[in-house]
Image (cartoon, rainbow, N blue to C red; front, side, top):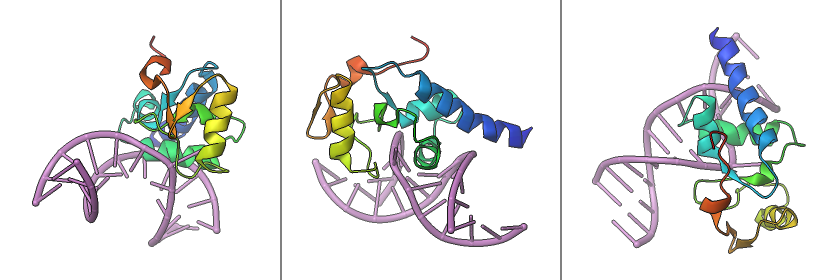
Length: 106
DNA sequence: CGAGTGACCGCAA
DNA sequence: ATTGCGGCCACTC
């Protein structure tokens, strides 16, 4: 079962990310917590890098609402993608982050 | 198969 | 206030 749960973690994270509505964002810590491991935010980052490249990881930011570090193309690309979805960012930080913060329990 | 690393978070000095 | 460290689990080489 342990192995199964581990797989579930990635499945959950990817599933959640795939559900993020356009114009909203979420944090790695939240995804990790929702998946069952609040302190496993790092794994979410790892999955983001080696997981499905088609998933809207651009809507996933750190707990500051800031853009990720190793995003493909840099934070500028990340910001540009968010802007394309209607999300404005300032100084590499999403505007009204708390207001556009998406929550599955909402 | 084993070891290292990671797009993070939280706390301590 | 800032900086440094550890911790957690999963993925890749």
